[in-house]
Image (cartoon, rainbow, N blue to C red; front, side):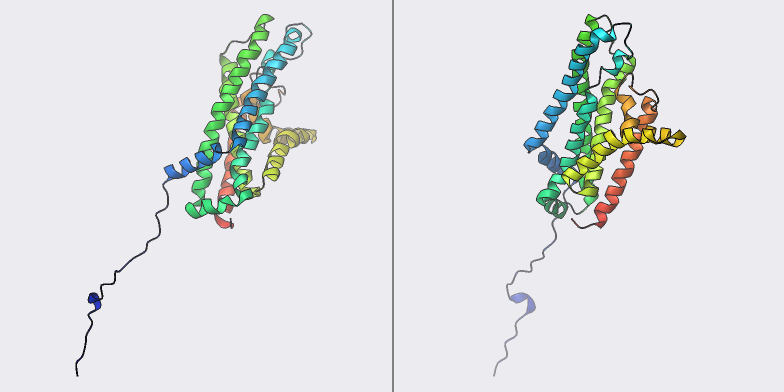
Length: 276
C-alpha cells in the first residue's frame, strides 16, 4: 500500500491576483471632456452662432443708430451699443454650458463617464475648466470683432470710441460674463439633468426674472433686481449700461461669481449623493 502526497506548491497552477484598474488622472479626464465637447457638431454650430449674433448684431445696431447717436436728440451713449450683441450671444453660452452636461444624461453616457471616473467631482471640475476658459476666449473675441465693426460706423459720425478704459474692460468683461453664464448653466445642468429644462431655467432667471423683479416696489425690489445674475454681471460687459441703477462693473461681477460658485457647490454635493 502506498501513499501519494501532493505538495501545495507542486500543482503548477498559477496564482493570479486581480486588481481594480487605477482611476484615470485628472489630465486624462480633462482630455476626455475636451474630446466629448468638440466631437459633436452642436458645439461648433453654437460657437459659430455666438460670433455671428454677438458681433453681427453689434455691428448692425451701431450702423443703424450711428447718425442718431451723433445728433443732439440722442438719449443714449454710443457705449451702450458697442457690445449690444453680447446680450443675445449670452444665450449661446447658456446652450454650451447646458449641452456639455445634459447631453450625457440624455444618452445615458453619463453612466460610463462615472464608471470610468468614480470621483464625480472631477467630472464637474473638468467640464468647468474646459467650458469656462473656452467661453471667455470666444466671448472676448466676439466682443472685439463687434467693436471694430461697429466702431467703424461710429467713427464715420465722429463719435468713435477708443479701445481704452471702460471700452477695453467691456471687451474682456464680455468674455468673463459669458464664461460665468456658461458655468452657471453647468451647475444647473447637473441639478436638472435635462437639456430643455436647464436652458429654460437659466434663460428665465437671466432674461425674464431679472426684469420682472424690478417691478417689486421699494428698496427690497431695487436690490433684488441688482442681485439677479444677469443684471449683476451685465455692467462688466458694457462701457455704459442701459440701466444706470445696476451695480458697478466689478462689484456686480463679484456677485455673479458668488452666485455661480454657490450653484456649482450645490451641484457638486448632489452629484455625489444621487444615482446617475
